[in-house]
Image: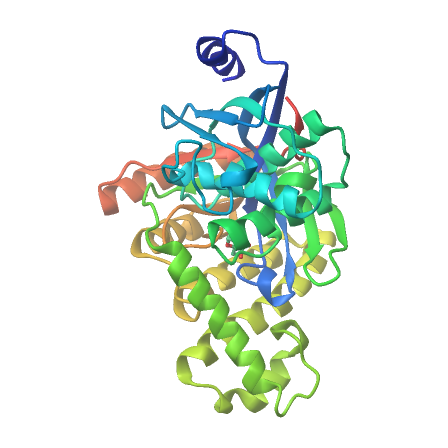
Length: 388
Ligand code: GLA
């Protein structure tokens, strides 16, 4: 991919790009839809990434070419608040991510030189593997490389999140940008989304993380996503009458929740119950993982899927079929949808020596039930964003 982008850069800008950076997508093993509730998440950066080749530009105009869309966009700092290009036309959707990053870095008072860049990604869009965060973190790295400031990875992640929340308009949590910035090869990352403390959790070598793409792409996600987040906030507001001092659903134990759940409107109760139980489930499952109890960890993944399907209502028929078949196959400890939901991928924890047979059987089963050809592969965990 790098060579192809370098050639495109030549065609567009008549020279060789000076730098290249990459930022990975992520898969999340457990702790879904809890990052914006101050909960615990367990993602890993994966071997699918956004790659940017770039050079500093003269003047104040940045020009980007998105190889995946065969489209160019040009913008300056001055046009960013209006989300317009240099010629006053609106920024295309894909350009909101790099432009949002530039906007967020500028808001932070950082020096951000104009650049010429060509980029592409092999993180499938809308698949639950965080293609947007990988684009954001790749451009934060690109500007860091050019400008010479050096922010710790968590600060870079927070600026990527700010771009997505305040510029793109998706009220996401910190998990995806964190995983893309801080990934460590052969490890899962356990992040406490309140304190932002995190630890590496070694992945047992005899385990494979198998990603299964339903090929169904989510629609209207940002609207549904923001609604889920609003329901969680409403639950905190109502529960803070009996439970003085709570700041987020993180502060509500399952016992306290059961005691006061009747105060919540039925839909809000379902959403909040998922979050409260998922935070508890993740904390316990991480202990199981550390003790090598993979069946217990896998059970928690299965329970997570059921909860996302029935309580949080972010699954879809294809994700349910993929998960149900996976859970019935030999060697599979656990299977569930990963990421925001509404389509995209499932994550499966499988005994390494059975991973290939598992992938084949899962693909055949899914195809015969849905008529769709899935993409199923064992993914490798990777390091976070940096030089390519
Ligand atoms: C998306 C968001 C994350 C997180 C997940 C659900 O990927 O970007 O912040 O909320 O959904 O766990």
